[in-house]
Image 1 (cartoon, helix red, strand yellow):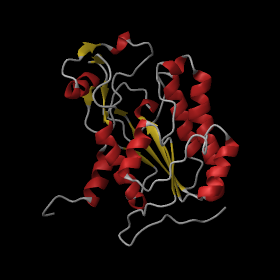
Image 2 (cartoon, rainbow, N blue to C red; image 1 turned 135 degrees about the vertical axis):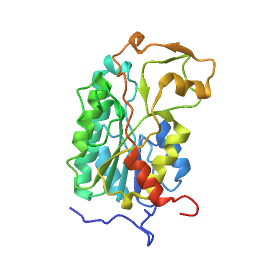
Image 3 (cartoon, rainbow, N blue to C red; image 1 turned 90 degrees about the vertical axis):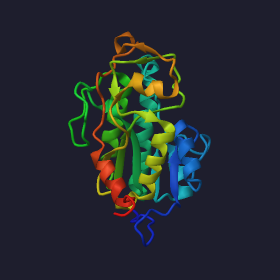
Image 4 (cartoon, rainbow, N blue to C red; image 1 turned 180 degrees about the vertical axis):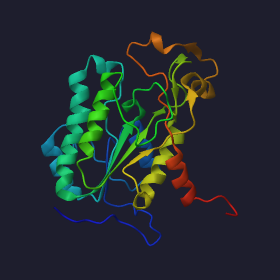
Length: 260
């Protein structure tokens, strides 16, 4: 196994280079590419995470020092009927990346979700017990987290985001979350990537304040209609909000307020 050190400048910040991004055409991947143009984002033809041979060829070609894994199956409702595809992408795809990463020893950044928690109390901290899960998508993401934890160097980022404006005519008043819009969350994740060397944790919650899905929706779609999560086609949590104090403390330490 190679012993590649994190590319790092004198100020401790991550140098962008040899950072391999999966899911570069997805919502988060596309946003990160705009924020960090130097990210290496192979096409699906170059890097198919569900094909171990494709993953091995990509690692051999790019020799990544950092891997940012954003590729995922994210349709919570369809996952109930497309379980094979969901598992193939979220678990087997992650396993292929991890299996190959063990040979190259990159710092592996895995994007996960707040749904790994049961979601009955909210305010979940990074070290709170995960599960049981409410739906099959959550199960696949929880399994993927455990796959990543076999690596010697990794960071699991639990987050949740929506495209803007709110994409649906209705929103749940009884589902509480720390979710926010992509234009809010993506810069936060980009900041974490640029300061990866400074993060002393293996799990980190990057999100915003607790609010209902309805309140979030109203910010970009005032005409949105209220609904109940009980009407959803798949079981959903009541309160899956995240404790983000760890992330806030880190961010403040890198960007102190004026005069501090």
